[in-house]
Length: 103
Image (cartoon, rainbow, N blue to C red; front, side, top):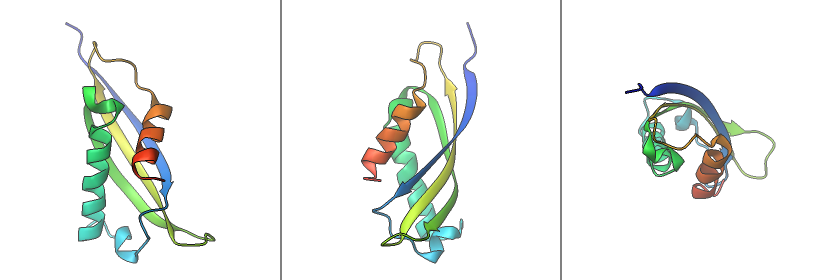
């Protein structure tokens, strides 16, 4: 049998329905951890659901110069693709997360 291949990639997006607050920058805050849990749920329900996935929320920050405080999210996804799984569609994954967050 062929071992599952490990792949790592980043995903960056701006969400308009997560108002920025400074505690989102603290990776030990309840709000940061809650956001990470929500993002893990979104990714696990996406096209990556057929793979062993880990979503690491790296950074959350305010997007300056916007009408309201939009929030920029930077994350790293690591997944182990099973041989029988379809190829990863990174653009499709981005759109799935964006649509689910109304970003």
